[in-house]
Length: 273
Image (cartoon, rainbow, N blue to C red):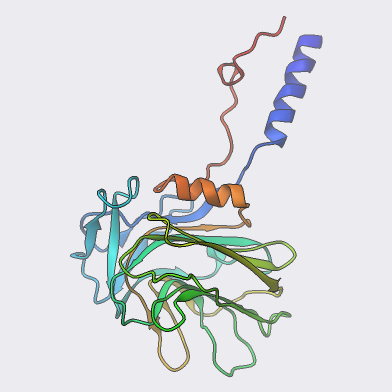
C-alpha cells in the first residue's frame, strides 16, 4: 500500500513539473515534391501551395541548418493556404505562439510575412488579424502585430529592431501572447548576428477573422504582403511558450515541443522497496 502511494506521489510530482505544450499546427515544409504541405501536428491540417508555387520550390537546407532538412522558397507572389482561421488555428481571446525559421533571399523586399492570420490593418473599425515576419529594408526589424478591434480589444504592433540585416541568414522567430495579453517576440540567428527579445504592452480581445491563415503572406489593405524568402518549420501553439521552451526550439531545429514525458518505471530508474 505504502509503496503504491509513494509511487503515485512521485508520478504526480514529476508530471506537475513537466511541460505539456504541443503544437496544433506544424508545417515542416521539408517536402521534396508536390503541392501539399503536410501538418505534422495531431491536427493534420494540410496546407496547399498557392499563387505561383507549383511544387518546384522545395529546397534542401541540410548543409545550412542541421535538423530542418528542407524549406520552401517564396518568390513574393505566392503562399501556403492553411484554410479557415476557425477551429485549431484560432486562439480567440486566449494565449498563442507562432514559431518559424526564415531566410530572406531578396534584400529589396521590405515586408516578408512568415505567418498571416485574418485581414490586417486599414481603416475598418472591426479587424481581426495577426501578422508576423521580418522587415528587410529600412529599419530592419521584426513585424509582429495583433489587431482585435471589434472583438473587445485593441491593436498592438511590435516593431523590434534586429540590429543586423536578416538577408541571407537563417533567423528563428517566435511570437507569443500570454493569458493576460502580454505580447513578446524573440529572434535568434544561427550565425549569432541576431539575438534579441522584446515585450510590449498587453493586447487583449477576441480574434475571430473571416479570412484564412497563410504561410508567406499577410492579407493587407492596399496590397497583400508576401515573403521573398526560404521558410521552414512553422509551428502554432495554443499557449505562450516560456523563454526556456523558445530556447529549446532554437537549439533543436526541426523538432517541436511534445505533449509531455512518457512515464514508465524505466524513466525513473528507481526501486521502491
